[in-house]
Image (cartoon, rainbow, N blue to C red):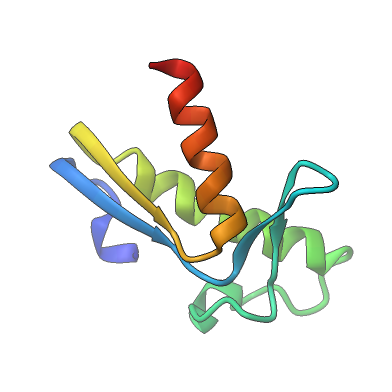
Length: 95
């Protein structure tokens, strides 16, 4: 993830893995910090108050950076079926 910062690409493909899911009842994203695989992202969070919220913000910032790298377009896939369905509904309401 960190090697892409500062670079722009024609197209970007982002896979939203199991650390980002969707709760249909609450109609909101659910960030599962214990499932996130980039262990290095959490370095320096020891001793911080409200560390869970900080870790959520780290994950969301990482996704934000990746999704903004494509100049011409973004290909987005969600491994969570509920999130994938929600993204399709959003896409169809825009087009």
